Amino acid sequence: MWRSSAISSFYSKFTSFYNPSYYYATSPSIFTVDGVVRPVFSTSQHQCIRSFSSSAAPSPSSLTKLGFLNDGIDAIQPLASKALEIARHYGRCYWELSKARLSMLVVATSGTGYVLGSGNGIDFAGLCWTCAGTMMVAASANSLNQVFEIKNDAKMKRTRRRPLPSGRITAKHAVIWASSVGLAGTAILAFKVAV
Image (cartoon, rainbow, N blue to C red):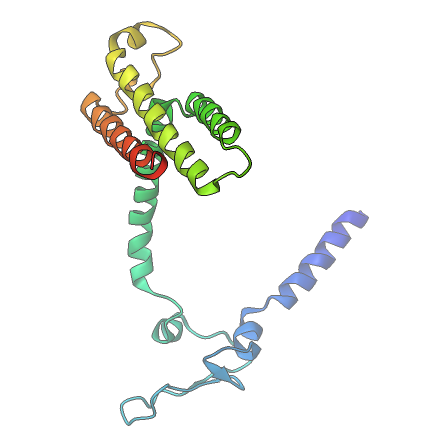
């Protein structure tokens, strides 16, 4: 009994605190001074001074004129969500193709070797380039391994859900990914580390 009265008391306080007409009428903004919206340029074409009353919230059309709401955002949201979905799909595929956790072990090993071989001072930029190049080359090798093993991976229960046997990504796409990442990693190791 006391819980419901406490909840209703909180709800009434919250709703009285967040009253849209109160918010728009009295909130400080770059557009308002004492609740009056004034145009930036005071020409004869811009005679659109609108004052907000404290009894009602502004209409959606007035907010659109001020730039608060934009129909273009509504059109972009489906495209943005589709782009995010595609990025997640390919990111997941590349993560699985490169066997990223296994590649990180290779990177840890090469980073440890770099630190132990550095002597007194550690070149942190060289360490970062070494780790990045090693990660890329290891990801490329693991990806090419999965390209060569598509048929065998499709037969085993443990590996049939990988990107290539399951058909989430094509072999051509995987070869392009592996080649580009491998060449970039090799270039990093050749030009940034072995100098």
